[in-house]
Length: 96
Image (cartoon, rainbow, N blue to C red; front, side, top):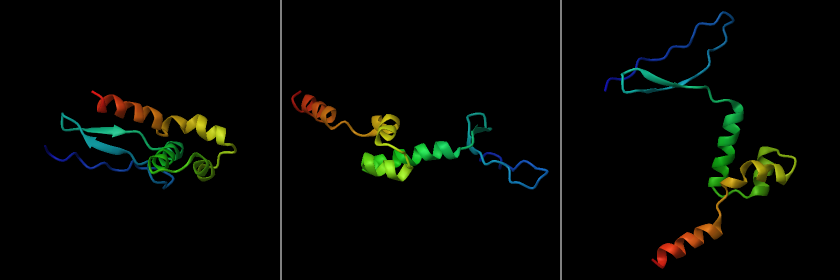
């Protein structure tokens, strides 16, 4: 497969850089263009990676700057591992 054509920044009249987009080749030889990563999206990615690496809820609250632990848990609580459920799955496989 040939490399996709290089993406060029759009010309702007006020000399500000054009937004960066990520491009990946598609089956037709063109490119898939993905939307710009916003600071808000990057904040969620950062929080998710912190959780994946074992950060506690209280520590993440401080890192993200949430006023309360409830906000942090309401937003990201589903990303922390459920150890009881994990142990139950292991028991099912182990006893099979």
